[in-house]
Length: 114
Image 1 (cartoon, one colour):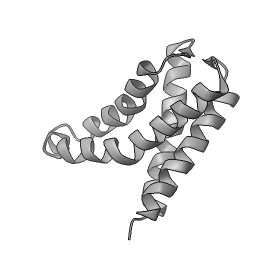
Image 2: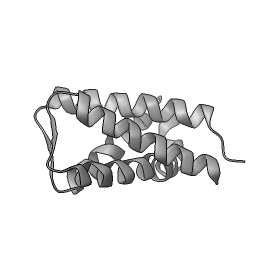
Image 3: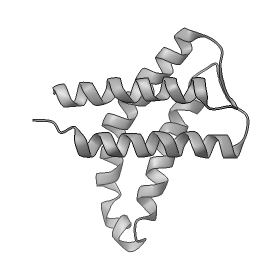
């Protein structure tokens, strides 16, 4: 359980860094940033692994492209649902999602639940 909470917290910190450092991503308030970071961290730690397990049979047929789509779709649906988030373009969106995906993947491999 502590590994799960640690991944949520680190994912939230990574999102805050991405929002503050990546040009083209705007958030209205600091509270919105913190709320978004917590929700994206929770989604990356809980929802994405469940989607990956559900998509496993299709993943073998499509040679891994379902996993790529799952990694893109999870943060995108959270960011689109939160009020106050504005993303200026598709390149910025894909860059932010790619950074979050790489960090979340690394965290999942390094930090395990016991």
